[in-house]
Image (cartoon, rainbow, N blue to C red; front, side, top):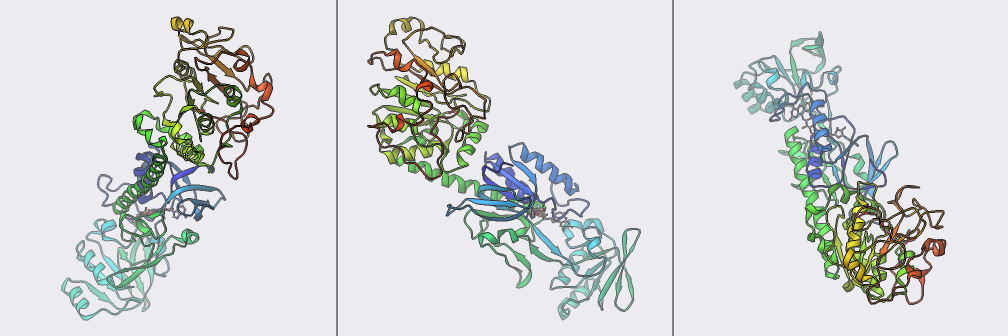
Length: 600
Ligand SMILES: Cc1cc2nc3c(=O)[nH]c(=O)nc-3n(C[C@H](O)[C@H](O)[C@H](O)COP(=O)(O)OP(=O)(O)OC[C@H]3O[C@@H](n4cnc5c(N)ncnc54)[C@H](O)[C@@H]3O)c2cc1C
């Protein structure tokens, strides 16, 4: 469970409905957290019946198998009790905070509540202790198990005759105890008599138990009626207190004009009156058996996925209309993106409304500022500050990231900055696909990842993406672009012709800027605030790899030095330089300077 993460869906309750919904969502590549109190309604029963393919399985085994199955699709399941849920501040529509009994707080875009119900049993001494064993309620759950036995039916409500007739299908020996129930109507008494069901008047005051087995039902008169099982009609109380913070309350559960308890009302898909909140299983349908609860969970999971897709598509359409490229996501196709990688970066961006400062990286600004505009490739563009800055200076930019959240934000910012027509946002998982074309400038700020990431390979691809030209074009034509490491000695950067050994000294061709290796460059170390991709003290340094356009006179003194030494202690200075076009607006809560991030 990640407290800083925004899950697509938090499922409250890990019974049949919850786990089934989680399975559907997990298989739809949603990030899902199931929080389960570990008290499924049928826990007292020896086995689950009427569940095709798992007939008779112990409830605990069924749920353990379910947990393992959903885990196979990346769903997280934690033991815990949710005490309340409410809307996350600032999110009018669908963003929720889920509070656990231990004080933990998790966030979700949607909720699936499958907390089940509590069976409120008749207050007869000793009855609750035998619940689910020989005190029963449902012929489909336990009927076969008591076939041909002496069965009693305790009258507490309007369903007594119905229950008695159902159990009469399973045994010839059924007795109705009138107890505190409403008087039998003449036609009911006639039906019972016709089917050979005996009616015993009087209040039941206790149960006889011998060797941990029900043996009889004691009446206030003192009479004992021998019975092996007793059928009761509990009142169903939905476990829904946690929803009060959302203004979602229970209503009476009515069947055939009779009230059997309460439930959370929902439509056929499980959608409640509160947008973004779905329910499934006994919390909304007290009559659902395990297989029906699982089916409802599946249905709700599918509806939730569709709802999320609708929201994501709305965002993509907005970006498309803005003339930017979230729509180009399809260029790579779903198979072009590793699910884990995409999930990791999307979750990172979803932690806050904005992750980066919105200012261009000062090292990029430092190097590019003197250059005339050309074409640029920004690898790991994040929320787009570098791409927007470049576009504002006249560059035509291809900006790449793996996170749709980041790309959507970047596209919106680009539109706001009026440069959307000069940026082609593309979604790539650089471990799998790389943008097509060659560019005058390739920028890869902080290209790294805590996940498996072939950085050297990607950098080689980046080097190959540099357009021919420049002062040493003739050499490159023969050998391909070389890579000149700069900054502190001792670190060679990969070049396209081989491994990480490209160490041709001197100016020219392609320039890599290796900055940010304190203390040599005086650059801020990794792990600084606002740099979620870089754990403290770990990971490779940020990298700007660029080549000036062929038509630009090569100035080794500009791009070949370690920028961190000169400017690293004054981050953002160049980002505020005169002539900088329409900076992306800063937003409340933005911290630190903008840095590019890991793999696109
Ligand atoms: C004694 C008995 C025997 C039964 N036998 C059968 C049978 O053989 N076959 C059959 O089909 N049906 C049987 N049923 C019915 C079956 O129990 C229900 O159909 C099924 O449990 C409903 O599944 P659910 O997921 O909606 O709720 P549940 O299975 O009750 O699961 C709800 C889960 O949510 C958790 N939860 C609740 N509140 C919170 C919270 N605030 N935070 C976190 N977690 C929470 C609970 O701990 C629980 O694990 C039986 C019922 C009883 C009472």
